[in-house]
Amino acid sequence: MARRVSTSKAPAAIGPYSQAVIAGHTLYASGQIPLDPATGEIKGGDISEQTRQVMRNVGAILTEAGYSYNDVVKTTCFLADMKDFAEFNSVYEKYFTDKDKPARSCVAVKELPKNVLCEVEVIASHG
Image (cartoon, rainbow, N blue to C red):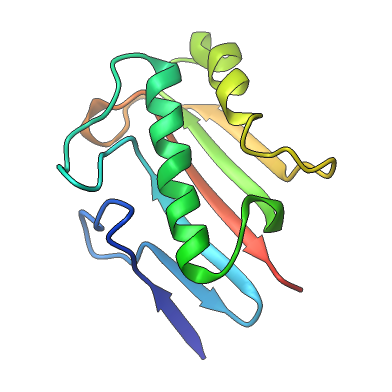
């Protein structure tokens, strides 16, 4: 049976989806964009600031569910512009400090919700 995860420390879902779902020992988190959960406003004007907010939102969901960044086995990262790849990576890598980094896909997309610069979704496991 799947369990839904919800926390006020990450932005509320802005559509018909859950912040995350746990099935078995695996957490599937919906993509997070750089919304400040307290205000609902986009936080950060550049890719570094937006990436930090995205990763804080991801961390809040992981914590609420009893997981950590070390439990993340796969991420999917979406960038509005691939020219931000190096700067995105310089922030992203600070959150995955364990020697075993998660698998990852990173793609540029035509447009992201609310015209943000990045979005990150994660899969974590206790298995």
